[in-house]
Length: 294
Length: 268
Image 1 (cartoon, chains in turn green, brown):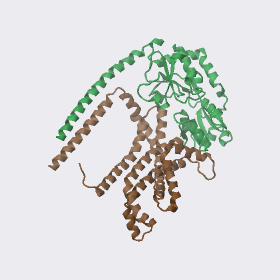
Image 2 (cartoon, chains in turn cyan, blue):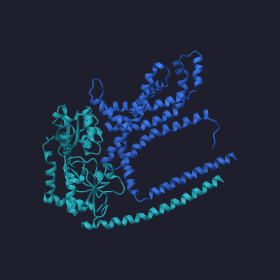
Image 3 (cartoon, chains in turn purple, brown):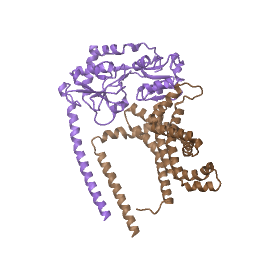
Image 4 (tube, chains in turn brown, green):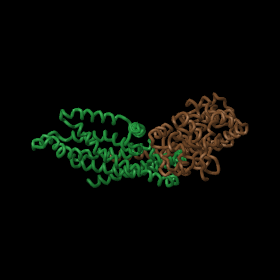
């Protein structure tokens, strides 16, 4: 008696599964055709495929750090990336009121599945590997790596890659800075990796590391504001043929990407992009250059 | 009759297992997002690309685990004995041990890691190591000893009072009774929950990455953020499972054996 009861339940379960599977199969076709239609659309504001109609939804991580954002408020238009985002929105025909910001932790920006942002702007370096998972806009900033250490430490006198190899180095996880340490500096000791600048600062304070590698504008901010007594020991020229660039992140296949690229191109042609960079990142050219062998 | 029933339950178990997994697989594989999920989480190329580095980093997890485990076994035993002591002279020791256990069982390990890993070396005391690996191991020892001491204590309290009385009547001192009569029985009884805590400890070695050292989970994160592909996390999980599953099975086996030895007839 007991056995036959189970058999009935199993039969019911199988049926349910078959139904669910059939239902899912049906959805598949609809989703596919919607994307292809949109790909051919123009960049008129009304034709754009957006997460939320009529608004441009932009993602970035929280907290949002200077000089990319100011006061942890992306919506105030201050800071380099906030300003670039609003300039792009303006080119696309959105007023400032029609832009909403959403918090997108670094990992979520490239998690599979539907994105809850139209694009994400969060100092993400464009690489071929990453481009397999998401689409990038054209670069909006050429970024150099830089190294920060205490002014009174032996690290501060480093002028060459060889000087840096003996140091204990740290980097933030999720940054290309760590790759830079491993591939270009190739230190004698394995580098240490931190969740954020605060942890790297604590490790510097605890003398567990001698220096941190960061992108140059962040390095300036960290040394000037976040970690007292440190300085930008040096910046590095690009390691490869092409400069490392930050790009905006789009869901793979999002047609909005081409429109944003057009907007970026016209901002560059008009000199507006350069002006924004001058306004928010002007002080970053001062650091001494540490040469690297290409 | 008995055999037929056994065969029948075996058959039902097999059918139910096959059906469940077929159904789950069908639901997952036919879902809209499956191609994307497969590419992001189960890419064979990413798996093989990230695996060697993660395995190399996993050595650090094993080192921390082994060193911490030995220290925990000893330290937790001392704590448990201290808490189980009865002499009025040892009252302050009992209080200290109790406060210690309350404190370290109540504070998230992550906080302990940050406090000890970054805080203590920042004091710059002479002779105190600044190595993050040292402080990571210490944090795990301190936190887990609190848990494990409670496991030991449960074992000690499960030994019937008559055992102690008998030992005392044979002329053993309190300490001798504890050492030769109570603890051997207590420890044997708590081996399964002890192993349980060590499986948990093995996984928690993945936390030490937050203060800098590159262990397996961090290595996986580094790969994921470099390539925007999460398969490396699956690779790390596989490596952790390779250690924790045998440990888990061993725990089950020990629990089963203990039940056979101490329990009554098994009811189907």
